[in-house]
Amino acid sequence: MDKQIRDIKVSVIVTTYNQAETIGRTLDSILAQKCDFTYEIIIGEDCSTDSTLSVCRTYAEKYPYIIRLIENVTNKGLRDNYYDCILRCAGDYIADCAGDDYWIDPLKLQKQHDILEANPKVTLVHTDWEFYDVSTGKTSPSDPKGEKTQFRKPIVHGSDLLLPIISHEASPIVHLCSAMYRKSAIIQAYGADQYPFRHPGFPCEDIQLIAALASMGDIAYIPDVTLLYTVGECSVSNTPDSGKTFDFYYGSLELTCYLAEKYGLNLSLLNRHAVKTLQFIMAQAFNGTDRERRRRFIEMPYRRRFPTGIKTRMMLILSSIRPLWRLCAYLNTQLHHG
Figure 1 (tube, rainbow, N blue to C red):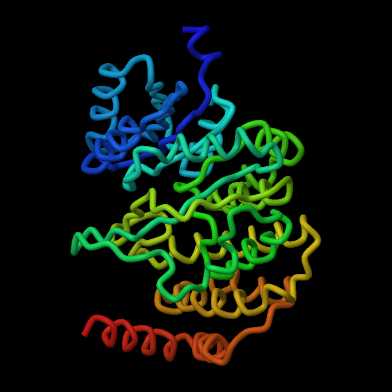
Figure 2: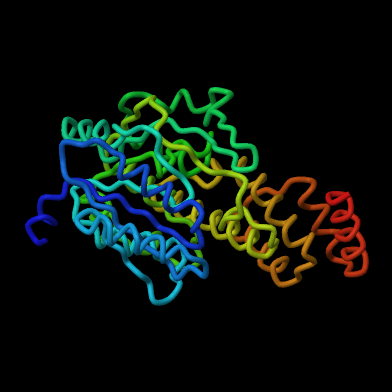
């Protein structure tokens, strides 16, 4: 086994939680890869309450020389689960596929591996992808309006993508589940500054990783569709719980600000993204008549000196009068459910 681990070229991370219905499809799509090198699959099973773990155990028993199953003893959450998996990877390169998404190109890993092998300055290579709507079974393009075209060149300097990535222009410019990146580069970034990767207030795992890799080298792009990204299901960023939604996007905006400062970007360049995000965040606190989250919201624009839009300011005014706030929130809920 030790020799086998040393010979592994690519590690594929699969983080999963309560995805019993889809995790088999994800693993099958990875096992279908055709490569001239050895790869492994690292599954981070995060204490699911359904039968996800049982499915993962079945696959691990069937493919013991490919799959390494990590059975978390406590629920770590997506961010910590993902970075703990990175630290367990044996490959020179890392790819990942979420437990509800799947790859559709059996040559995905081979194509990306070949680019990284031929281009030492490339830290990450990503591909095109499509949305998969579980409610209809239909797929749709990732960039129907061509907004990402200017960023999708065969090879670009990562520094040229830092601002678009951090400001969420044409987001996401890089879908991490379509990517492969150098383990040595991300371990170097992680070792230099663990804060963006581990801070409990930052809910996601991808933006900080992609920004770090963009700051360290070139980014390559393959125009082939290799990934179907599932939409229409409840997830950490898509939940009917207004409080959880508030926390996710509030933390994401804080991460955006941290990264902008880390890489020397002027926060004013984030204003357009901030105005839209702040309105959405405030709407979560407003509709939930959540006074504590309203207080947290008020603090951010002043601290970051972000402008606020008219709708945001209106919600702040209405929510300053408790009975009026409750009435407006009730009417707004009825309007959306009516």
